[in-house]
Length: 606
Image (cartoon, rainbow, N blue to C red; front, side):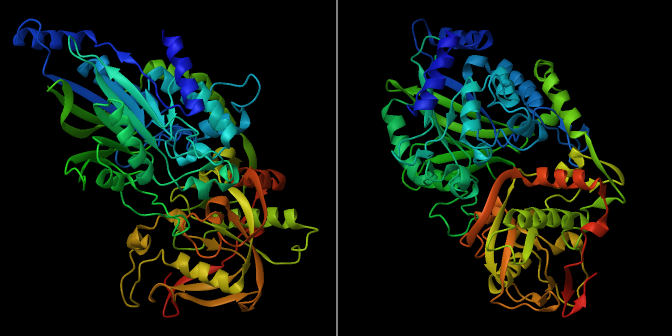
């Protein structure tokens, strides 16, 4: 019976038919409670109430263990958080014991197969797509825990559609994406929804529908993989299409699993007509939804109530913290009225992974994969002459970031050799992704370099003019909080103006410039020179840029529309490892330069 269900789930996910039906028998504890309720009402009577718990995770990003592969140690942070699906499994088991397994549903809201060396290893080093290849560790863990469905995240597409489809085949649950459409037919390319029936003892079944929605930004961020193959319309319009269908199919409860935040904003500017973080919009605009599991934003939202503009009913949203640090619980109370089940109330809460131990069943299941990856990331590829760190990189030109730009410059120069663009100067961008990365003096390992460049970005060469580069730098300088010339400087309050994350602040190598933080946004770049002379606005440059930025991530001006001269699929972190391996020695004299500084009315801040 279970095997037949898995086959059906895989078939529906592949065809986009999108429906999976499963009866859930009540657990013994729950059956006893329901029998008690039955007898209290008298023989032959239906229980008038039913309690359902929907559990949810999101943005797991390859975290199975409470382990930091970049530090080669147990994960820890100042807040005392713990990570990993092994912890989530323990929490899920507790909830199933409390509520009765047959009264629970377990969902995820996307970004599953990218984010740690564990997931990188099984995408690139020992890929699941190889003939006779391994089963993805995230599929193994989520199957063992017993997930019912998962929405597609944007990072699911980072390794290409073939890898995603293989992962989909390996999962015993459907990957949902009602707004991931085939570019030719405009029909769903993945299962749009999942339906499960719960059977309260002695009462009609409760039908629960789960609609999965993913992020429109995929069309920008993974353009190289999806252009011409898949399209990603807005969450609001697709929810408005599917929720009435689910209700007409008899759904008593409708839950949305959305890989989309609640802010109503987008990081890609006006390149798409769709909102990136649209979950609250969906709740507000589309009637018929009871709860939304929120993802993508990496925020912790225990419970957010949004009133639907048409029905006046309250929709409950919750976002558990990323990396399997939290588990959302939606507790849904239903009452049987006039021959059908109605949702009486929904409440949401979070459980913390740091409150439990790892589930030994999960750690044992994936111990071999974990050890392989630990050995891989600890390979020595060179030696550093001194310690390099990102501690001050967001407000001082740090040699460790210059390493990234130097590697990108060298790769692009080699790629364009012999072309009509070979004589153009190559400049490069890089962001201070981490505030804690360190390459220690002495042996340099793959994990040291991976910790410096934590994303699976690839390299693109774009043709830009001096005027466009100037505008690019001005936009980037908006990362700093305007600070008066005589004000005390607190580095913890100097950056991230308007909530802009560190990964949306760029260094640009090959130029010299000051950023005057006493000035308003748009007029901060001063003394901008190239090759010792004031920058010529008409000068052409080749910008070596990561694919996220090249496709519009961060909404930097001009770069997304600029002419693309070259691109590749090899990760920038791999190029850094190759560069260090070829050199053998990591010496700042080979890559470091002071290209920029912060000033206030011309006086250096530091």
